[in-house]
Amino acid sequence: MSMRGLSMSVLAFLFTSFFSAAIIVIGPGDFANRTLCTILLSPFVWGLAMFYCYWDELAWRPTAALSAVTAACAVVVFMFEVRL
Amino acid sequence: MLRDRLKRLNHLHTVIGIVLGWLLFVVCFSGSVAMFYDEMVDWEDPDVRQSSIESPAVPIKPMVDDFRNRHEGEAQNLFMSLPVEEAPYYRLFASFKDSDGNTTRHSERYHLVTGEAIGDKAEGPATWLLRFHQNLQIERRLGRSLVGIAGVFMLVSLLTGVIIHRKILRDLYKVRWHRSMHLKWKDLHTGLGVWTLPFSITISFTGAILGLVVLFLPILALLAFKGDQEAAIEAVTGPPPAPAGVVAEMAPLEDVITRINNNTAYRAHGVSFENYGDANARYKVFAETERELVRFVQVDANAVTGEYDKPSVLFGALPESAIGRVYAAITPLHYGTYGGTLLKVVYYFVGMVVTLSIAIGTLIYLERRLDGPVGKHSRGFYVAISRINAGLTAGLALASIVIFYSDRLWGLFTEDRGYATALVFLATWLAAIAWALLPRDPRLSARQLLLPTALLCMALPILDVATASTAPQTHAALVVNLVVASSGGLLAAYLWVSRKVRAGEADALASSASLVSLP
Image (tube, rainbow over all chains, first blue to last red; front, top):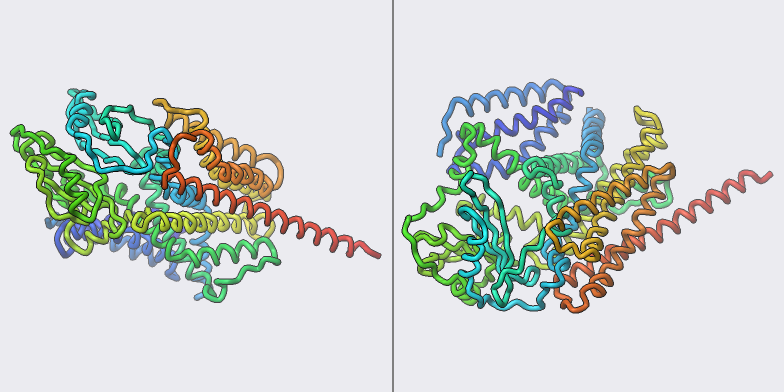
């Protein structure tokens, strides 16, 4: 599988999961609205991440960008407590 | 650079089509059919059809007590659906937790007038098709997640499809009927895709949400709540109301329902019981609405005093906000429940067009590899895939109509009704695939499978009248009969016209060949 294919099928999903969790942990607004907003946006976030994997001219760039943001979100998720 | 980007996006569009084309076809087809779930439930049970439903007059408490006494253990998530035209009986559902901690779900139906238990009819073809759409009839969480993921991929496919077709508006009306098969299909795929684009985006987005909730909730709970899924749900919906621990007499539910039906703009459809028999008991009455973009309107009532609150369009425990309102609109937008029967008919036919567009996309892929310059595998491989494709797509339609016949003709009013439906459905589908695998043109196999499908669809009203002559033709049953018969008619017309066109093409080919052979 190509780098783009791997990023699209695996990394985009990981990115969406950690990005959504990070929004729930430290995002603005009250908790219930934040969670619903995350669920509502998840198909778009995931879809756009997949789309970006094939949009960028250089194959390594989406992989690097998605990995970096996923790592940053993971830090937020594991370092901060959920703001209720 | 732009050329390379379009090539990459075209590759992505194709990859999604190859990997998920059949799954998307199955989900879209079964979803279009399941649009008439309520109506099909009424159609498949002619023995309980009622032409009109009055406000409930039967005391409901004896039914609830009877239901709770029938099953061992503590009743949880007790819910009662009230009689409506599509399901003219009371139906109670609950999970019963026994002393070992095992939970079993039970349901029971009660007569509309007498209030006596009438036995529960196992799930028939309508429920089979709905479940097939919702979770592919596999383990619920896995199935729903797969369908949700398919929705996300469909969104990406739509986005890439719009971008790679550079002259989308110019090609909107273009179908080159007299050119090659490939060009005809390409034009149809583009045209149908563009015309149905707003609908496709709505359906794939809302479907993705409904499926991804099941996938993401445990993941988000794992990440943000260290795996405590109940804490995650409670943080959104608030804690469930605690019982007072004091036994109390319940206000007659039928009176509460009658007052809600008479004094509000809504008609009660179901009731959820909270802490039933306790001083803190609540009736959560769900009312159907065709005027608001929500699945249900909720009216909360004190089960001891019988007083009810102002109706709320935010059912469950959704927050009173714009986001809560958007979330509440997801289900009606997906199932087309906000505009009456006519909207459902529109959803059904547009849904079928989307399904057709997906099928044509797969055909384009195969055609290019069978008769074109592309493709990494042997011709035999693509021929085999074409045959499976013909059996899978045409066979699904055939299996979907056959289960209505088998259910009605065999009178499967038994505990095994769901099993029998599954058996007939899968056997028909597999037989259709086996038929299509026979060594001949897959298009011929598809036509041979679609012809009985069309005939069975057109004959469905006859079956209904012949086998349920004493049952009234309710609005719901009439809708099913008309929609299925007209679908069969359209399919038969297509088969007739395409046969004529193909015969004409063959004649033209033969005459041009004879001209070439002239001295």
